[in-house]
Length: 403
Image 1 (cartoon, rainbow, N blue to C red):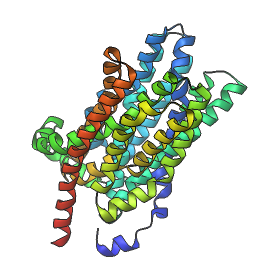
Image 2 (image 1 turned 135 degrees about the vertical axis):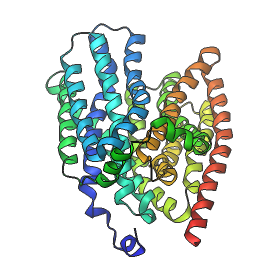
Image 3 (image 1 turned 120 degrees about the horizontal axis):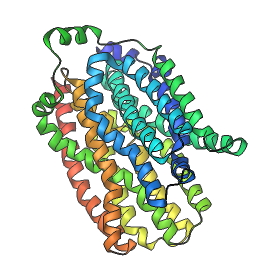
Image 4 (image 1 turned 60 degrees about the horizontal axis):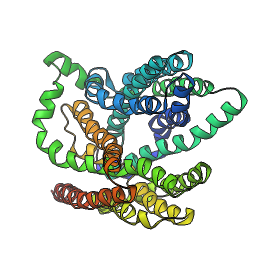
C-alpha cells in the first residue's frame, strides 16, 4: 500500500468487518469457558476428567493449526470464517444436547479446531486490509477485541444460568458463532486471483512452506513459543497461588477482573509503541513482567499483594496485545502465507499449552513457591531470547524503510 494510502487509512472504515466477528465469537467462547468443567461434572465426570475436557479446547487448537492454514489457502479468509462459525455453532449445540462426557469432549475438541481456523483467517484478512504502518495497532485491536468478548461473555453467561440452566450458555455460544459467520459474510473476499492462480499451478503444501521458512520458524517462532508460555502462566500459576494463600474464589475472580480491565487499557498504547518504536519494546515487557511476577509471587500472601502481582502481569500482557500476530504478519511470505500462518499459530499454541504443563510438572515434585521461582527463572532467560530475535525484526524493518 502506498504512503498516501497509509495516511488516508482509518480503522473505523473497517471496524465492523475486521473486529465485529471477533468480538461476537469471543463473547460466546468467553461465556462457555468458565462452565466447561461444570458441564462435564454434571454429566458424571470426575475432577481430573473434567480438567481433561477443558484442556481439549487447546488440543483442538494445536491439531487444527496446520490443516486450518491449508484450508484458508484454498477457500480464502471470508469462506473460512463463515465455515468456522457454522461448524463451531454445531459443536456448541451438540455440547448442549449431549448426555455423555465423551460427546461433550468431542464438541469441545471440534470447537478448538474451529477457533484456530477463525484466528488464522482473521489474521490473514488484517494483513491484507491494514497498511504496514498501522499493522501493529490493527493486530493489537484484534487481540483486544478477543479480550473484550471474553470480559462480556461470562457476564452474559452468568445471567443466563441464573434465569435458566447451565446448557443455556452453550446455546448462547452457538448463537454468537452464527452471528460471527453472518458478519464475516459481509466482508470482501480478498485474494481470489491469487487462489485461482494457485489452483492452476498447484497449491503449496504445508510442509513445503514449513521447510522453506524453517529458519524463521525455528528462531523467531521459538521466541513466540516463549511469549505464549509466559502469557499462559497467569491462567495456571496465579489461581493456584491464590488458592494456596487462602483467597476465596470470589476474591480471586475480582482480582482477575481488575487485571483484565488493565489488560484492555494497555492494548492501544502497546500497538502504537510497536508501530512507532519497534516490536522489541513491547515483546520484552510481556516476558519480563511474568518473570518478575513469578519471582516475587512467593512474597505475596495477602489479597492486596496478589492483586499487585497480577496488575504487573496485566500491564505487560496488555502492552503485548497482538504481538504474536504482528510478528507473524511481519514474517509471513507472500506465497504460501496461510500455510505459514498455520505453522506460526502452532508455535503460539505450543507455548500456550506448555506453560500450564510446566507449572504442573514442577509443582508435582516441588512446593508451589519453588515452582514459582523455577518458572520465573526460565521466563527471565526466555526474555533474553525474545529480546534478541525481536530486535532482529526491528533492524530488518528499519533497513527496509531506508531503501
